[in-house]
Amino acid sequence: MVSIDGKAPGRDRVAAHELVDHTSEITVRLRASTFQELLAEAARAFCELIPAAYLSREAETLRDVRITGRDRTALLVGWLNEIVYLCDVDGWLPGDVESAHEEAEGLTLRARGAPLRTPFVLVKAATLHGASVREGPAGWEGEVTLDV
Image (cartoon, rainbow, N blue to C red; front, side, top):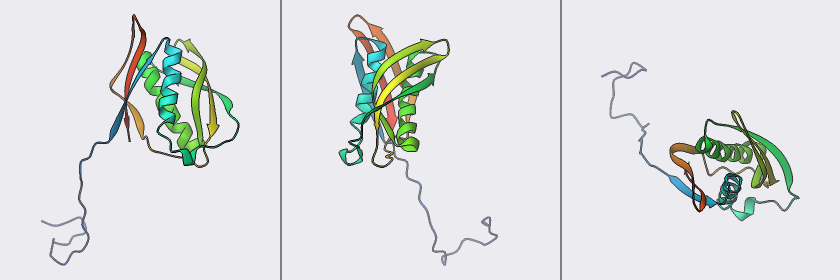
């Protein structure tokens, strides 16, 4: 066998690599009386994943956030992915949802949050795989898996 550099494999090679399959995830189960409260509870759950050393004592601010999705499960997953983005890129952590307005292709949230001392990335993404949102007699329930 010849490698792409044209050299035959030999014992004198020092470089090596190993691929190890490892799954890391956190499942978030949510309950609330309304869908908007379910979204707010998702933000609060995400906040629990951020170490206190990263949290700022600066005043909270409001931001409008647009989420697209074909159904409420996709909207919940989209909201969590937007939180990942806001923490990583903007260094801003939404901790609550002031309002949520559903539209034809998604929703607009007014989120309350505060800057992080430094951007923090623990969660890579929220996934649609196994995600669910359902309304029942006791209110709304949701479940989302976060890749960490």
